[in-house]
Length: 295
Image 1 (tube, helix red, strand yellow):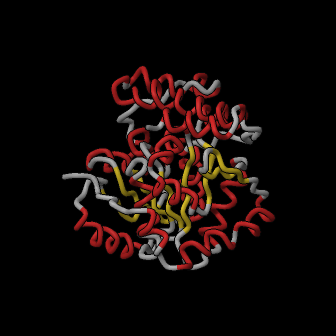
Image 2 (cartoon, rainbow, N blue to C red; image 1 turned 90 degrees about the vertical axis):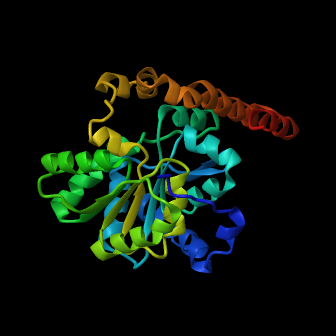
């Protein structure tokens, strides 16, 4: 089976119902006042620069003070920014998120060069378990969508060992045909989850979340990438000391050099070259360098 198709153009999204664009924008000033959001755009991709305490408070607010529409939580990192340079649909979708958190040391370096100091690295692998702990304490329900069948099943089993009172109301693997999407949405809606975890990888997960935002009967949707692999212990995380000094990416590269080659050897230099060009070079030269790097 192939991963769900996300053949969607920027024009398709622009023709989406007006509330899809308006509601994402109209509440941002209130959110900034209430939660002290300091948002900025890095190479056109949004970053909401807040600490973990504020981010957890926002997610809790979205669940408990639900407005009747799905809230989308995304993570911006070097990989998503590089993909978004070529895939403007992804950039559009990330920027439509209700909360877009800063993920990774590479993003922190790039932001610093552009004059933005990242308050806290809120990668999904650490942030999501913190949300699941709150979900257990407050009785929120959770649905998991993504990864291979045996991975998501094992993930659910180990989550219940870690959080015995967590209400997992359903799960499904992330490899499905496009014609199955309607049934998947109906299955999720029948469970009425408070939190939907979508682990389809970038750009599929962000685009899928926006595509189905007005169909899904959930309160919060979090795009969590390879989280299920780590929660199921299919992949090992870096030792804590490596995480603390911002070198978890190096550990992952050593684990899976072929899978991570593009991200480490190609995307990081691409990202930094464009950041340096944007910060220090004239606009005309910026465009030339960007055209060469992302050609």
